[in-house]
Image (cartoon, rainbow, N blue to C red; front, side):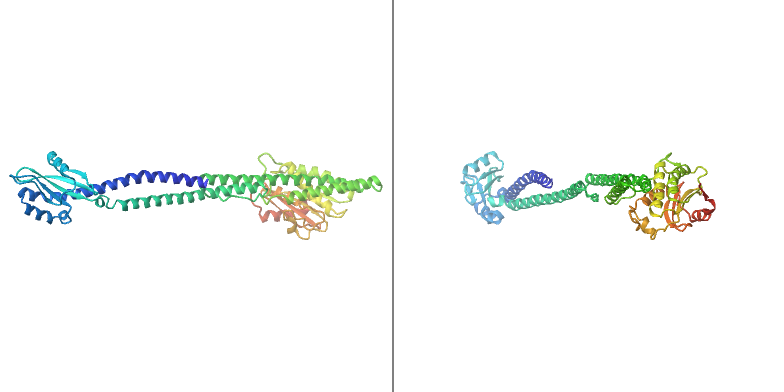
Length: 467
């Protein structure tokens, strides 16, 4: 493309230079010729006053020699026969010949004639005192006719070559300006095709290529986002399988001894390992993008109290088998939140599943729901050993040092909270273990410390034991 643009500019410039330089060179040549003959006519006119006064040979010779052309022997005056005197030629013998002189005298108009030795001769008729016509002949050599023409042609040729070279250079720079962004766009497309999702194109260059770069970067961002959503979904769905796996593991532990029981426990453990592998693989391959998903649309909310009662009914059966004391508070009236029911269910299962997985059997836990007007706070507390490094546990994809954890459970909970403008925090519960506090915004405003303080002070008095 770059070479093609250079060739086009070269052809166009050459045609323009030829179209203007050739006629201009011919005009210069013609102007030089006109200048030479105009000068000859002026020199011929200088002898006219003398011819009108006298035809004496001596006087005419002195007059001819006094002129510029006569001094360089380029002027001749042909005087016809007057009063019985013979016709004479003053100065040089003449260059055009007798016939040309006679024809000029008869026609009475100036003319030019070629000279055998080179150059031209100007024949200028001039009236004398007797009424006859004398002819003044001026020799115009070829060097005077072409004086300055060669220089002018060289100048025109130099200007033409400079224009051609300049146009080629400009075309090459314009081509480079166009080819550079196009090549970068092609390279980025190839990198994206090879799986390098971070490939982007600088948004510069001509308007069309700039638009193409903007569109490519937007497309690449969409690809990254779609892949992130896909892998996030795979990880989330795999993590939700851990809830029934927990039930299977607990039920398998109560089967007692025997080959069938051992096979069942081994199958459950293998299935759990496979699910953990899927989760880790999906998280490791996920591009460095923001969390997938966002705030739910209008009408996508649910009743938090109803969902929590339903999930606690499920987990209470497992808690009873393990001898865990369960407390539930704040779900005696409806609490609407802008979170889809499946998302809240997944978040609750993740928090409660962590309690069962990472605390010893018999460890009590509690779930509190607080409606603060502009926010809803869900607290999941336990009396277990707690989390040594809460900040590390909240990092995306970090297991917090807990054995066998994928680190995705708290990530699911945090994304649910952040989709409403809320947040997730870990701390020490009044039971002595871990407290997971989920702040769910109802109007998108940032959480104030006053709300957290009211919740913290009011939590113990609102708990009641679930039988």
